[in-house]
Image (cartoon, rainbow, N blue to C red; front, side):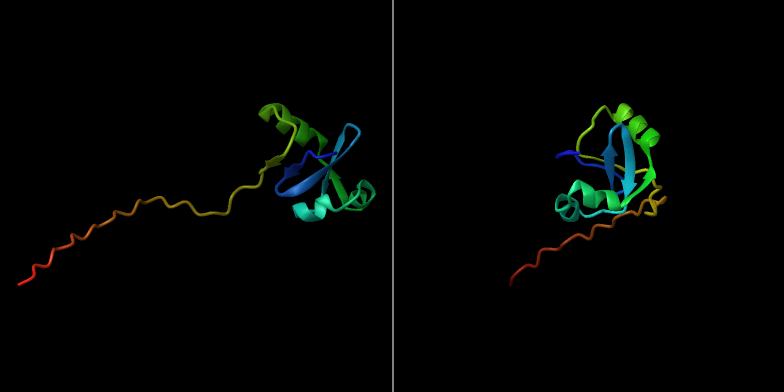
Length: 93
């Protein structure tokens, strides 16, 4: 895979030939320090069709992190009004 990093939901993708496999590695320092043989031990699910579709859609093949899981962050529906308090100048006697 060389110096290009493709990730899916913060997990690195290992490319072998024309196939892409999801690994369990999420730390960049760990990924950089491994050889291809070592990375193969962490190889998991085949995600070739999903990755090819995302690469075609975003037209880039290098250093991408695709987030496909829904966010768990709550979205505030009501906007809070900010109340500004006026500062009074204190007069000296």
